[in-house]
Amino acid sequence: MSYSTASISYLDNYVADLTRIVRAACRDSDTVVQCYVSGQLVDWRTPAGGVVEFVLPDMGPSDVVLLLAVSDDQVQTNLWAEAMAPSAGSSRLSVAVPLTMSLGVDSVVRILLGTIGSETAVEVVFEQAAFPAGRGAGGFGLGLLGEGGFGWDGAGAAGWGYGCGVGEYGFDCQLLRWTSEPLPPGTYPIAVIVEDEQGSEIARHEALQQLDAPARPASDLRVQLYDAINDALTLAWTQSPDIG
Image 1 (tube, rainbow, N blue to C red):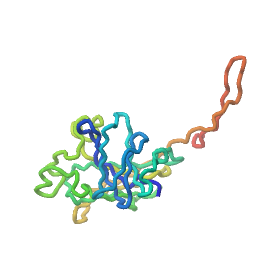
Image 2 (spheres, rainbow, N blue to C red):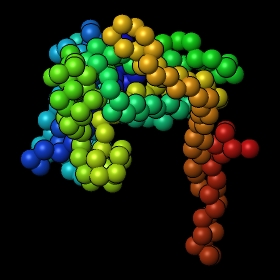
Image 3 (cartoon, rainbow, N blue to C red):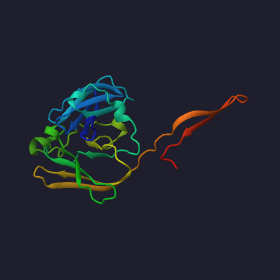
Image 4 (cartoon, rainbow, N blue to C red):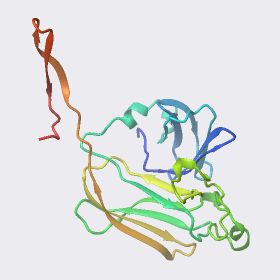
């Protein structure tokens, strides 16, 4: 195994006391989660109850955070370049599920994906408790009824101003996030299903998602001709194979 991003779901990303806090769930129990800040491997954690938390006091406003699930023997290996390199002819699907509905602490969120050209998403590619080990659930509904959404008090939510109003205006809701591994371009059926503690389906969303891959860059830039009289260069290059 080199690394995985599909097994990681971002739960929280917020600032407290001028320190960035990043929390995520990892569904692979036999992996370690690395934390990168703009290319630098700054920390790694073993999930506790399926959840990891990173405290990043030195992170700047323009820095980029990346979490990777790796095997024990790779915890000190910097895989940033490999993970962030553009994949030829592929891209990724991303799903964000708002956790604001009346969900019990043992409710489960499943994401299903189908193949290109099919009409139905059948393969379960992600499965996680809405509030792993009860974490992130809040409101008086949790204490009275065991529900994390009813009486929601904003536990784990970012608050006003975070991400310029990403979520609900004036109050950013907590999001469960999933990102696929690189996929070839095409139209994919995708479904998000929420089940309660008894396994009964309480919410479903299905869609056909078009995935477009970015064109690979041109290569082999070289000087073809130099005009000494006009002090001008004529350049040549190999055009991207994705541009006709």
